[in-house]
Image 1 (tube, rainbow, N blue to C red):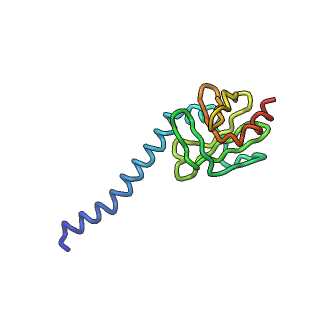
Image 2 (cartoon, helix red, strand yellow):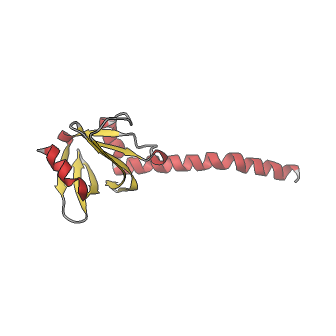
Image 3 (cartoon, helix red, strand yellow):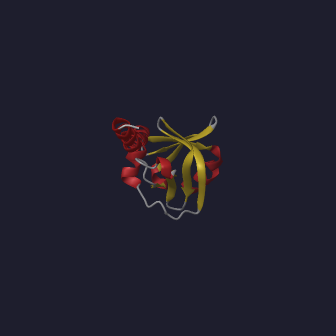
Amino acid sequence: MNRSQILLTLAIVIVFPIFFGGIWSGVCYLIGAIGGWQTLASKYETAKNTVVDQKFTDEFGKFGVSRYKFTLTVGFSKAGIFFANNPFFRIGHPPMLIPWSAIRIVSNDGLFLHIKADDTDIWLSKKFLGTIQQHLR
């Protein structure tokens, strides 16, 4: 190998991870901004180790137009609904605990449960309907 090949190899080895990390971070951040996660988190951000009564991992969900396919953690407590995203996708998605006073059920027709937190539409598995209704009473 000559000197130019070595420099090219080093450049690829060094630049690619930085480039990939930058793209990954930007896309994750953009998904959180477009879907409304960041808007909610600006009001309801909490610690990632927030204690909840029930916690479900690897859940499907949708915030606005942003889909989360089996990356969500959804938790329930007397204080509200806890949301966190998989650590690989957490950039732009801080954990949050949305109080029950900010939640309302829009519909449970179709395949998913449609709720609203402030002005953000959220779709979750229908298996959470009973738990959410119980806390909203």
